[in-house]
Length: 150
Image (cartoon, rainbow, N blue to C red; front, side, top):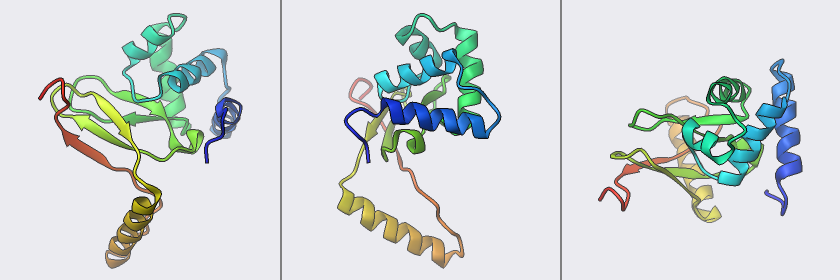
């Protein structure tokens, strides 16, 4: 569960995950994590660099790759030309889903009520058992058209 100030815990989880994968929690990686915390939603690399002008575009690409490989950041696949990135749920400890616009590629986060998540988990695990598949976790991507494109 999130705390009032998730940053210290988030940074420790990010540092631990990077270390476990043989990487340092460099100042550039910390700035990327800070920017992703501030923005609070999936963003393109140009949007990330715009949010923190101390980040160079090439450094953002390189470091996001390491953050993704280490499980600190997650890539959100969209139909446009730009991948979007956000902090991984295991780092933020905030379970959520996405609404993805199939026209412009914008991504909106949304959360479901806990009772619905519990019911969804039960149904998904049942579907997994029926297929002799073990489900570890789930995420939902809803595809449609945002209000700007509709």
